Image 1 (cartoon, rainbow, N blue to C red):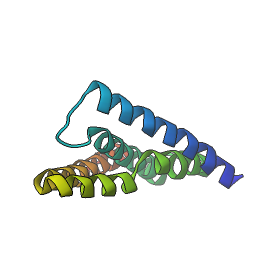
Image 2: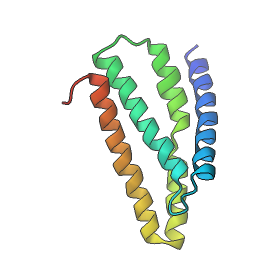
Image 3: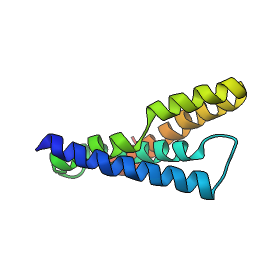
Image 4: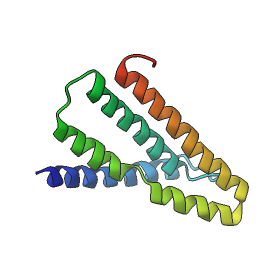
Length: 125
């Protein structure tokens, strides 16, 4: 049953990642860095942190929901492999753009995860 929950969540997460990336890359063309990947990774970092800290410290969350949403959906929604590929592709044409992209993912992803932790815990630290 657990594998099915993860697989279904992963299928939805992958489809949603494709949709969000296409929307941001098509309707908000920002050619300096691949904005769609930054958005999905930052949003995923926030949501995973929020769900996990909420379930640990504030609410009783069904472990099956954590498997479905955290492991399945968000695991497929966020994308380290695309981030790595796009960073290297940018590096070949513009090392500076690659660094901007790399640090944008790290900085905003960490900040989003921190914000998710604060909201999930209901307290700052």
